[in-house]
Image (tube, rainbow, N blue to C red):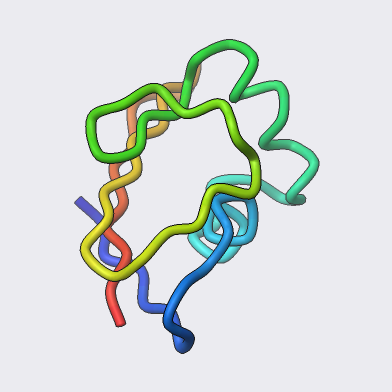
Length: 73
């Protein structure tokens, strides 16, 4: 699991995945959501602007493999 540090109290899912280097742009998150490739805290996520807080776990399933990130502050 890769820990990704944020400098604010919260961050939007699309911004977080961009910060983590999982996607190049925030817009690249939408198709991943539609395909059910993003899991937040064990639940399939559908909202691109879902607010994430320290301690949240984001799992991303892609053709390149499965990735797991933890939001830290």
